[in-house]
Length: 133
Image 1: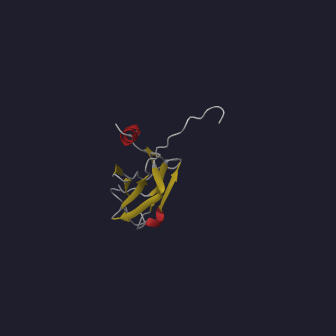
Image 2: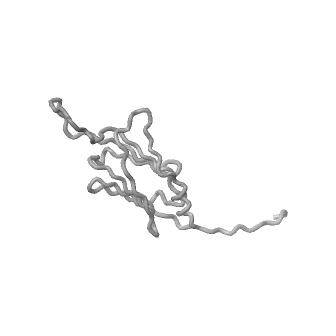
Image 3: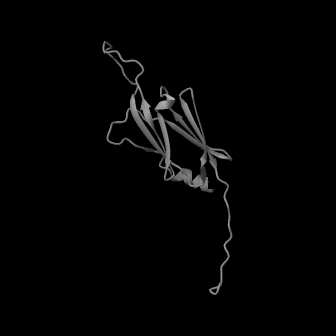
């Protein structure tokens, strides 16, 4: 079993953060890896690019923002209202061997895609020194 397998198994899948406010909706996520990247897809239909905030802090990707109601009409009397509007936050723990300086993002058709480059592992041999050195 490699490090990636252990990391994926260690996730109890993602942490959904609600904070003090009720969360309007929880975006669904897909996470997969390629030989060179970790790829995260987040389902954000109806969320505008300027309403999305991405932060990586302590090896945790924090995706937050707000899905705003596009039309508001006080005359409407809903019989079914299943769309969630308002703030959201999703936290995804990340493995330590990613290069956070090389992140690509793309929002298309309501799907936010993040591609985070993997760092090449460096093996460094350390010489044991004599006490006199």
